[in-house]
Length: 97
Image 1 (spheres, rainbow, N blue to C red):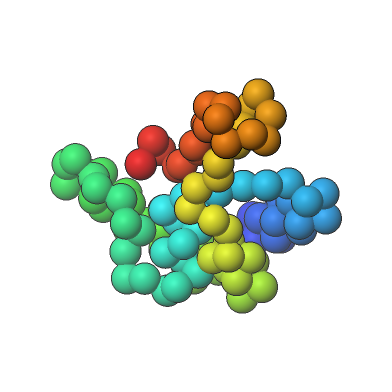
Image 2: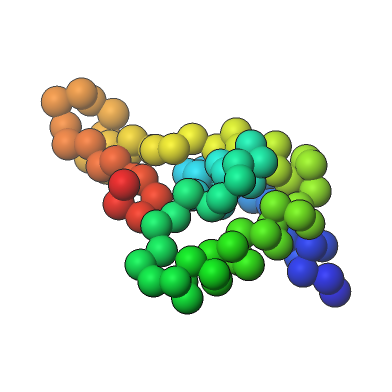
């Protein structure tokens, strides 16, 4: 089984099951064909690896998969104690951004 097929199967399962998610840096940047991943490598070696790892989804991702990933929200607000505004809100963002 190819990695591309596996990635598309994962996205299809997420869509079919209605699983909520938030966009990470590769999701949004791959979908928009951004020239780099949006990450901040801390060394020349990490910089080189970031280009390699980002190149794969950018070059091999199916258009419909990229569209779905690009449509994910950047944050998700949850109210674990109920839906009332007076209750605490838990905000989920990728990588604590």
